[in-house]
Length: 162
Image (cartoon, rainbow, N blue to C red; front, side, top):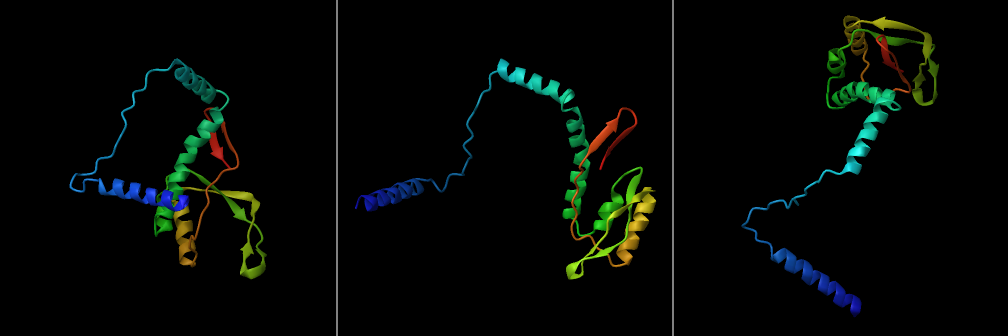
């Protein structure tokens, strides 16, 4: 009985709240006005974080900045029907690709290729030609993953990921 009464009470409260709404009035979001007073502890934490970002986390911060380019590329690929167009439009000065090793046949008709120790450098025109060749041979990009396992830089010389 007590449970039935509390359920009835809940239904009555919900009905009263729902019926009390003025349906003619436009709904306005209720946004509380918050005022943030300067907090010295907050400022100190921000300064400490900035100092750590410039020292201990310097390489991680740089990696995240460079990674943003590939996150955009990944998003563009997922949102496009034409991967060749997206990949061809991606700007770069030099792209180093691994050279495919010997293919290995696996179960279910799967072929696995690993990169050999060699690599080749491509300029954007070569890259477009390679992509067009893949497309003409019937290849299509079904899915892609863009992650790097290592990021490094030498001041004034090289920034790269692997």
